[in-house]
Image 1 (cartoon, rainbow, N blue to C red):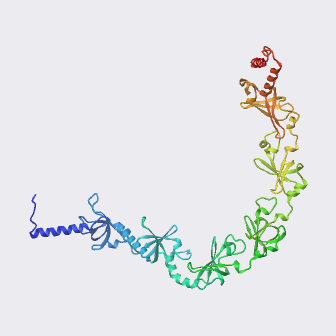
Image 2: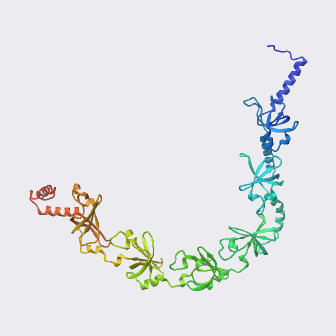
Length: 576
């Protein structure tokens, strides 16, 4: 290899200049920067660019330019801005992108406009959930326009705004995600703000606005339009002295009402109004009414939970559904009354602080539970008809009264299972029952059928604990024995642990059923109707008697108790 050390000749100097200029061009070309290329060749699929300083020509896909709407740039000599992604990829080619360059340039312009608080030009290109898509005219960047920011008033149709160039205000930029949010409403409002200031300054507290038109509702109040130039709010609490749950209960869109100005906020450019303050407070007349007295009221509104009535114009009261009837539960006021009806009611509550008056309709009628108590006191018998039943009880309609008495399945019989006994009865059956309980305040009457029959447990009245009784074995299982005392109609269970002293003998399988055996009463409570029987207790009693009776050492050898002999020996030693 030959090395040239002499750089003084003209040829060497020219080569040095060319080499330095090439290095300068290459130094300006960095990955991630936007560069400009000139189209020098166009094919059916690709556009070739010439960029000084690159070792090869960058290539653009013709479809990329199509999707960007820049197909007209695919001509020799046209300049196209691209993002230099790679100086050299795996194949040794230069990698560039026109779409990414456009997005970056567009984002930079949006950031600049946002920082300077300047509007941008765009057009609405489509609708999406919650708003619209706006295209930035200068760069083609896409931005989101929320539905609430389209206009300063509700628009049912925005077709006249589609694809029309117009100004938008940038209200939010997310630099991390590269998202932009714009507002058309802010542009419109800014034009109207100066005019609105002049309009609001016309009003002062105490002014009366004539003929304002109902424009719309919300959960907190009603909006009125004043001469088509200003919207004012009447809060829910300022609509009426009566209780109002929603403005649609009182107003209809398009209606006209007089308003009283009660507040003016020049900073927020808001005017607050009232309707109820234009008339005297009817609650001031509440002193004319007394508790527990009968008054005639007018039904003005029917609800699921009751009815709103008027004692006088503007003085409303609530008639709750629970105060409609003594006996009918969950009754609807809509089925009993209609708007405009005048009905008798009694005032049950007057709360001046809460401005609330409660009334009752049922108190104007006779309480059937008081009538029932007078006619059928606790302990008396009454006849009724089965009106309905469920899985654990029966309801009886008492003859001559609009009352359903409650009969629990446990009060049907002394002998059988209550739920099994319940299945024997059907709607329409007539029963004679005993009154067990009356709760007038709770509108409840409880009756029993078994209480009208002899109690088989009375068999134990003459019995006492540890007394011996003879029983018949009905059945046996692993848990114990089912037995019935002779002369008694009730069955009892002797538990396995109470069959015998000796564990080996405490086997229910020893019995087949039908045997007659003696046992002792282990527990007896007549009030709770509870009795416990035990064979083991009887054995223990007899064993103790034997120990007390037989004192000789050998006298117990012939007794049928396997351990009695040893017990006798212990007793003898103790006595010595």
